[in-house]
Image 1: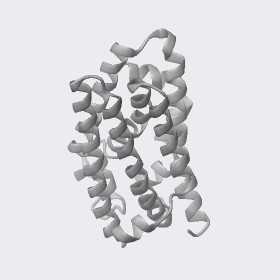
Image 2 (image 1 turned 180 degrees about the horizontal axis):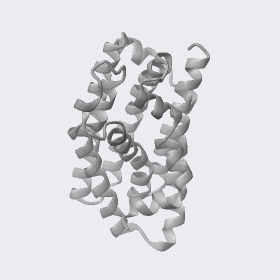
Image 3 (image 1 turned 90 degrees about the horizontal axis):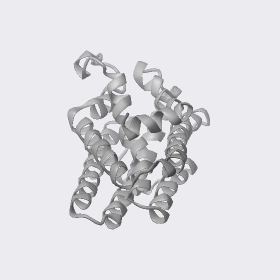
Length: 224
């Protein structure tokens, strides 16, 4: 069993609360309130800024050229995602200036700073375990929301562009690269003695992902 599958099996409630959150189900069937999605779009861009920093930290933590190249690939994927994200924001009437001028909300700060703290205090495997729920969770969600491909999603679906981004080949390939690197790091630096600690990091990151979805729903209910 891969390290990822072992982590998911050891923290099933945390993982399922994230990938099967009400926000995700609303994205899939189109019932998600648009106010929740707008809040999410803005906060997710601010989130990605901090995750770019975390991938840069991964390069710093690397001790081999191969790891530095893998970290660079992850950073490039995040920066590409940020560009795509801003284009989605613009289609929703949110300019880059407006997005960048918005303050981070509590769940955004909690999650991103947790990942950066894990990276600063731990090693490269710790950091990748903290990062991986984001990358591979979104890849799993993208596949789940478009199991037959994006062409099978109705043209008037309000969140079709978002689903297309995360179910598309580019993001799925980025997810595969991240998964491969996790497994490689696990073989080199993992051990049975460390597994409980890694589960704790993984589960916490997944719970913070669920809190990030919930933040969007609560903002919509509050009229934000």
